Amino acid sequence: MIKAILTGHTRGLGAALAGELLDRKIPLLGLARRTDTGLPERFPGLIEQVALDLADSAALGNWLAGDRLAAFAAGADELLLINNAGVLAPMGALDRQDPAAVARAVCLNVAAPLMISSALAGLHRGGLRIVHISSGAARNAYPGWSVYCATKAALDHHARAVTLDGDARLRICSLAPGVIDTDMQAEIRETPVGIFPMQDRFVALKQDGQLASPRDVASRLVRYLLGKDFGAEPVADLRSLPEAG
Image (cartoon, rainbow, N blue to C red):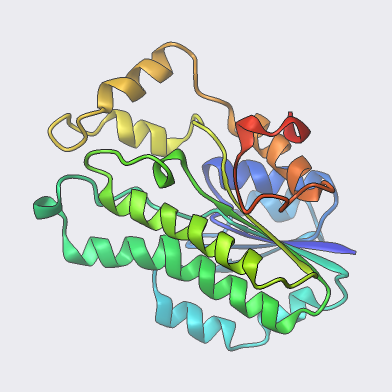
């Protein structure tokens, strides 16, 4: 039996991933600041939700020390973990970044996925597939995005190092999904050029119809996650994977 854990399951790509997994009848545990009241109605008996601020590392640590995660994982032959939750802010040059916002971004974008990954690896002795939702910003630096670039690059390097540990039961990939038509893209387009000098590039992507739909990306991502080649490379781009086409 396969079960899945998904962070940030109520919005954007996360909501599309939740729908894709549940449509496949895969029991899902969703972790986000808010719950989605419509999911239990659409998928009775398949969805569990926890309202949790993943940027609060102490709160997440306390939750992981409890028994809810182990109870959900019980009976699964294989677990899927999709570390999707993330935040773009703070944007801007280094001297314009609020230190508290920097800390929040690092906790949400890096600490939370690493904490949940290690907790699952420790409690589940069956198969485990972990996908970190990465970004092209992990591999290419952008002005004004130093925090986002750094946190996504951390996920890439985490996947590389975990792969070197050689745990045969565990597969991991830090996967860039491409440019998706979500609220994050709207946030980018609304950011002043003085804070993000490359804003015009992202405005053009929207105007030219170059943004992928969350549903299409979620479908390709889940197919890859469940496929035989998942984890062959610890860092990948969804758009370059023929298996996910």
